[in-house]
Structure formats: C-alpha cells, structure tokens
Amino acid sequence: MVDPQQVKADSERIILNAGGRSCAWLPYLDDRTIRPQGEIVGRALVLNAMLQIAFQAPTAIIKGWITAHDLVKHLSRKERELLQKDNSQLTDQETADLYWYIEALWTLLWVGQLIDDLAFDQPVEDYMATLCPDLQDQEDGSKFQTMQIRSYDELFRMLDLHVRLHWWTRDGQLNGYPTGNVSIDIIMERRKTLEWVMAPEYDWDNVSLNT
Image 1 (cartoon, one colour):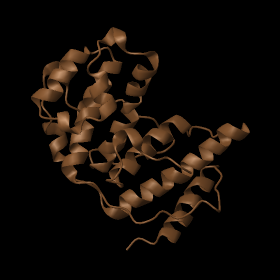
Image 2 (tube, helix red, strand yellow):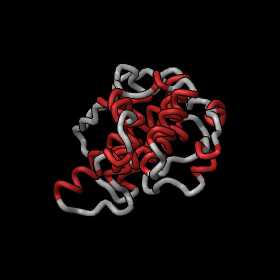
Image 3 (tube, one colour):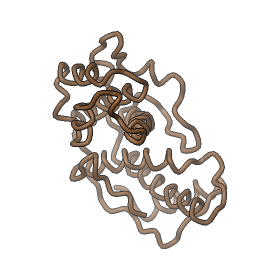
Image 4 (cartoon, one colour):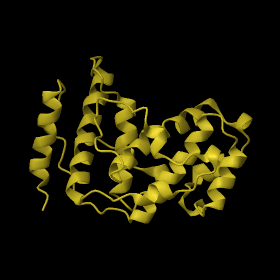
C-alpha cells in the first residue's frame, strides 16, 4: 500500500538533494488507476509513428502505417486532424509539438520496462531508436508488445516526483533562477505522459498539469 505522505517526503528529499526547491503546500497525490496495457502500447506506437513526422516523414506514409497496424483507435482528435494535412501544411508549432513526443515516448518505454531509468536531469538517450519500430523498414509494433507495465508503486512515485519537479522548474522560470540540467520542457512532457498512464479518464489532448 502506497503512503502518499511518505511518497511526497521522498520526492521532496530527492529534489532538495539535487539542489532544487520544494513547495510544502503542494498536496499529496490521490489514488490512481493504471490504464490497460493495450492502451499504453497503442499510445507508444502512435507516439513513435507521429514523431517521425517531426523528422520529415510524409504524413501520408505515417497515416498508412497507423491504419495498417490497426492503431487508428489510439489516435487523439488532434492527431487525426494532423494526419489529414500534408507536411507543408503543418505549422511550426505543430511540428515542434510532435518533436516533443520524443520525451513522452521515452517515458512510456520506462513505464513498459524497456528502459531501466528515467533520470529527470537527463534527456533521451541516443539508443532509443533501436528500441522502437523502424517505420522506414516497415517494422510492425512487435518491439513494444514485450512491454511489462511497472508496478503501481513505481508509477505513483515517479508521477509524484514529476509533479514536484514541475513546480520547481515552473517556479524557477517565473522567478528567474536556474534549475541546472532539469528542464521544464522535458519535465512537463514526462509528467503529462505519467498523468495519462495513471488517469484513464484523461484524453491525450486534455491532460491536466495543474500544480
């Protein structure tokens, strides 16, 4: 049984040991529910596919791969809209948003135990591509079918840590002090993904990131 109060204290200690700041009034997390494995695997496959558009893969090819592998049901509304566009019609913001899928995907690889660590002061490792389906070689989604979702305790602790990291990096941004190698952009993408995993009521396009 997870003790939210102890988890909060553990997260705060980790952040303080990293030179960060904590917020005493930031509440404990409430009980969560982990999404079914099939939804997590489907989202990871969609993230990997959509990410390729940020690297100039044609949207028509990506749409075809997603359709061929029965992943349309895992697309969000915004993703469906993006796949109706040609690459030249994508805005800079849309392309940038797709690029940040790399951090969300890295997080799901941790959730599914395809990587061992999700260090909050480190970006994605270079070897990530070797763990993911290579769409250029028409690989299917079998690499992700080996995912074994981590325990509730592990996921709850990681989410709690990222909620508090989010507060610290946002506070640093608002008050003009550095947070070292801990990037608010990375933390936000990873937190969003963890929130989605542990809150089945959220649609991918509407995950709450309140602090």
